[in-house]
Image (cartoon, rainbow, N blue to C red; front, side, top):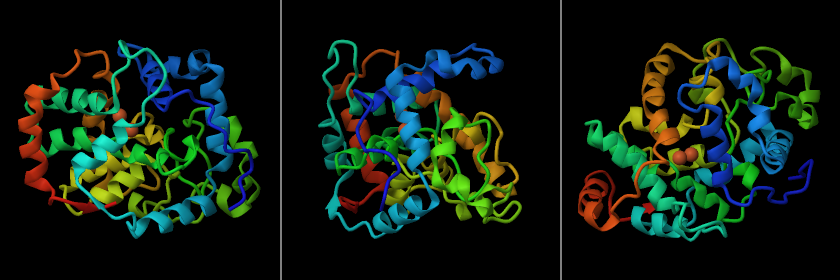
Length: 285
Ligand SMILES: [Fe+2]
Ligand SMILES: [Fe+2]
């Protein structure tokens, strides 16, 4: 696989991307201010998007999907995976930065407090476990980032659309029509979104979670669609219905970060039960 640009890691930590998204959609921020998101993007975030948009080609995505579809990395429990993800520590201030597990628990605890079903709480708890891709050695631009379809025209509702000029797919006329290689309302299951932690955690957990949870995991970074209504011409009626759940999930992901740090010891028994209710002792990763 030849990449257009180098695979260096511009972000000091993956959370820099998550923080940028949260700033972009800060509660109460007018929708029109989306256009000004560039002002909130520091140089490393901007560089991250440059790499992401240049390198996420249809060819790359298909290769990654094929590579990870076999789940050939062995078997682990959800807890082993969470511990593994937690080794993704950064050098920033430990007093203000929550760990990866804390972010997951803050998300799921906010969902639980609002009285949502257990599978919804569980979706919150596992939603970012796919970031272990980073620990497998995948570059940041292939782990996080707002996702978008490849193989058809890029929406101007994707952040930094100008960076797609460096993507080889932008020179393939077949990929740059409204529908590209797809057909009208063919359904998102037939669309190849940019590769990252969403698609990976969906692949790993799909057999164990109800469908609305699968949608939450698979499309939680698909901001052009769930926040901006882009790509509806590729979605079918079922996607539309399921996206209500994706939208319901999103605020918990975006806005739970500032909440108090979870008392891990106290809530652990609840999560042990919850995980055991849906998942076998070990699953293939
Ligand atoms: Fe995420
Ligand atoms: Fe998240």
